[in-house]
Length: 484
Image (tube, rainbow, N blue to C red):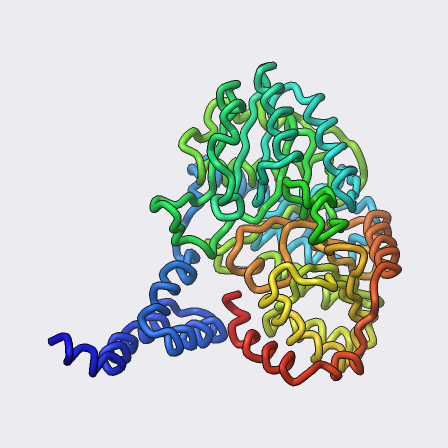
């Protein structure tokens, strides 16, 4: 029997692989590119490929993860319908005249992403770790009611310990502290790290934790959001995680260039709502009676129009990607994009191509050094098509570029947690702030142009001089780009 099995091993594995491949094709009903990528994995890694598929390839879009009670759902629908009527009847008075150009973008986000439009907000922009965390620690020190934090990565190092110590002190003072971390992003973080915070009355939850030691079958579906909400009045959103490397203290990366926002105004209440839904999904102690205290009347702190747009694998529409495409199609003069990873799907790639061909000044900025080599190779495989048409590409040399920012015409911008890749748009839970304010957008555009001084430009001629090995490597990795 053993001899028979060994002599017919390839045939047996092939026979087993056929129904598995059929299951992937017909039961999942995936995007064609994703389907082909998984079929390649099954073809070249028989049997083992299906185990990989079980870990990395689950489809959550059919599952309703966020379950709202009837009253909450009815209230949300009423607010959205009311604002839709106001836009339809042209009853919205825009603080910034340029924002009216984006009424269709606002309505799309409102209709498909339940993103209410508010315009009494104030925004501060941070581009380095020390400034961002100095402001955050100052706000934590002033907190009186609650502090809600959500980070993808938290390290047990100088910054991580300093943050937990500050939160522990506030918990001892009676401030309600909740800390949500991603179980994969912070997989090296031991539970004991939060011991003193929990003793002081703080609560900690892990997003999609593993039920099996050292094996998490939801590797693909991670909470990549970074949010902090303090007293329902102050909100932080952007690319910084918690660790010394984000302070520029890691020798491998050097200076860490990121973009983060501090927001005050009504948009913070939307950030609070997203946080609560994520917390309820991850924690056994859901929000209950104290809900009203978490939504205090927001002060009119500014005039910036904002929508908080989220996306995730539980949704059928890719909200943030759709917002990017809509913004790109609206461009009349310029598109400035910063991202550490660039793996667009066909819809986003075509939108950028059309913009370049239409004479729009399209510029993309990427890190000059990779933190994930395969993703970096895939990124370069897409650049050629745009460089050939006339797009400008800049490689950041000062340190590591981790910013996720898009600025169109200096009038509308997006800053958040989503990279320009298929993983962020389809597989991760992400959240972005879309800013309808010329002053803020022009500031982000100025920051981009300042960053250009620390870049080298990658021209199409230089791109063409890549070695055959580099081209072959990039072509192979590109085939797997839908699941990287």
